[in-house]
Length: 179
Image (cartoon, rainbow, N blue to C red; front, side, top):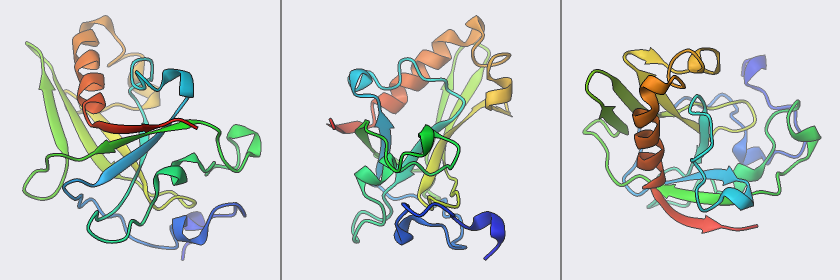
């Protein structure tokens, strides 16, 4: 295992650690996806978030024993974040994949008159969370990042696409767990 794939946080359960496991961009119909959310925002969890990094955890194949559980999303997986608390005291929203492409990937395309925004679900493991996954957004063939968000998707020109994106992801919510 490469050094950059190792998790050095003692509070992370062994089953969540990457340990050299490969990326798996094959998703499953009815697979659950978990996201933590501040409790006061649970009724509209995507309304005020920046659309440059929508991190979630994936469950794995639903017909087998889950590889990741909803409360696993509460683990603090980075040494620098959260004042080193082992778990965040937030609530959880549970989303479900209801439609997949033939290659078992999730991709939704939104358009306005001249622009295209692609919502792409991408398994993106990190050392302390193998199940880390992101909704990657691609605006007119450019991947949206923290660095380019202000000069791209945040511009007023794309307001309708931002609203549609938030709505499409919110439609996937099946349950809320208030902590």
